[in-house]
Amino acid sequence: MAQKNDLKKIVSHCKEYGFVFPSSEIYDGLSAVYDYGQMGIELKNNIKKYWWDSMTLLHENIVGVDAAIFMHPTVWKASGHVDAFNDPLIDNKDSKKRYRADTLIEDFLAKLDEKIDKEIKKASKRFGDKFDEKKFRETNPRVIEYQKQRDEVHERYKKAMNENDFTELRQIIIDCNIVCPVSGTCNWTEIRQFNLMFATEMGSTSEGTMKVYLRPETAQGIFVNFLNVQKSGRMKIPFGIAQIGKAFRNEIVARQFIFRMREFEQMEMQFFVTPGDEMKWFDYWKNLRMKWHLALGFSKENYRFHDHDKLAHYANAATDIEFNMPFGFKEVEGIHSRTDFDLRQHEKYSGKKIQYFDPELNQSYTPYVIETSIGLDRMFLSVISAAYCEETLEGGETRTVLKIPAELAPVKLAVLPLVRKDGLPEKAREIIKMLKFSFTCQYDEKDSIGRRYRRQDAIGTPYCVTVDHQTLEDNTVTIRERDTMQQERVLISDVENEISKKTDMKNLLKTLIE
Ligand code: ATP
Image 1 (cartoon, rainbow, N blue to C red):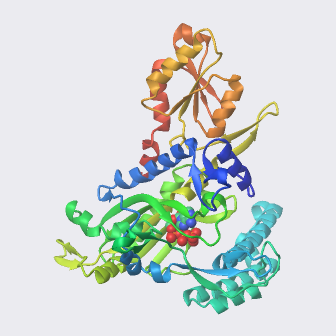
Image 2 (cartoon, rainbow, N blue to C red; image 1 turned 60 degrees about the vertical axis):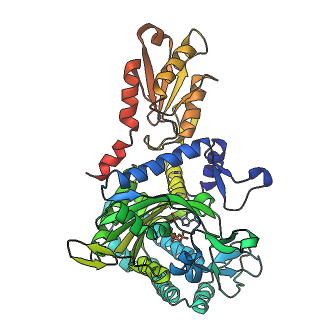
Image 3 (cartoon, helix red, strand yellow; image 1 turned 90 degrees about the horizontal axis):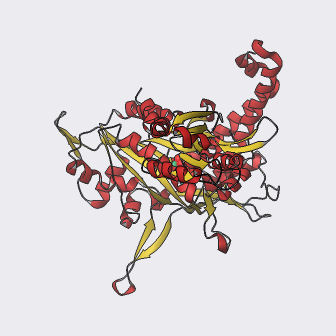
């Protein structure tokens, strides 16, 4: 697991090994836009497959769509994005740097949480088994003070956000003495609203042009197709529609690598339910989505739920799944109960009836929606940060290894001839020829075997098959496991079976239905 402040190392590792490159790098890059390289695309595709299969294979009542990025502009009026998809921005007059006012306050609250945690950890170390955390929280003067401050600021923040009270939001920043990390001063401008949608024009000038938006979320492509899918697929409520696709947001502050991008990918599923059943399904999806994350085997302590302080204009319940990134716990996925807001809005703006006739209740209604929305790039970052590991081996040598779950690893198997002679390369090629239909394989014969293992460790290849002189005698090879570095000798004819047992996506999917 990467430590705090390891983000820099992760960014350079991703570049060096072909996972993520800055966009248009030869022109010095484009802020908050990134390209995925040869390893990155494989990992990304595997994450997509894990998500897609967990939705569409495991649920017979979930089907997929792939809607266009451009949509009729009225869609965004109806959804509320034209009027309300704003972030509160604030500038520091000295550094001229721009921030999101809500993020400044949330970071301040997170710092107070960290201080409390630090005190608790210190005391727990000192008192050992006898440590009573609850009592400590209630009696330690420092913790009490931090907690009091946290609660007060949090209460004010929640109220200001819900009432869109920007004067108060700014006052909180000033009262808490939140300074600009660059200038170190508290010299702030007023807060302004900033719409995050990118707009462009469609059509040639002779026939007039229409202002269209690059979609800021994939969800609306599902809502406008609700009836198409329901009718053509004869879907019965409850049912879901899943989609993976690009979304675009003109983020005010775009930092932290692929965590906050201006062009990113979402994996969203809208689950349509009978009104009144939404809380039951909200809990169902909340638990199942957490299970999906935990199945990857990174420690449970890396995940937590975070209920929203401010509900979006469409939601009646919302929670985030947060992951412990190298820069603290951050949202990776949102689970929202969106009521019937979107379908009703589209009904109103399009003038078309969007309802479902429920044959069991013998009545028509506008379904309610539970949505699960996960950022593919944030998921990618969470996998890489949890997997990134620097180890010191016996003998003092070090290795950097990506302990990516085998099912998601970009390359499943490397086939390595021990030496570049005696017919070993030919034998290794023969093995690849046999296995390449089943796995992404790599062949590597350059440098010592140790260095080749290190290269595979660095891209997270879970298994290395080594062809040696014994192979020529008895058709056996060694399989080296990435994390333990243990080797096992097996018959060539068993390799496919052995590797597929360990890398099959089914392993992950099965844990979701246990
Ligand atoms: P944040 O509060 O971090 O801006 P959000 O609450 O606006 O995120 P949602 O609108 O709920 O995000 O979007 C669903 C998911 O899409 C998020 O959980 C996140 O994983 C992903 N996502 C949103 N914005 C971005 C972005 N700019 N870059 C990468 N992923 C994003």
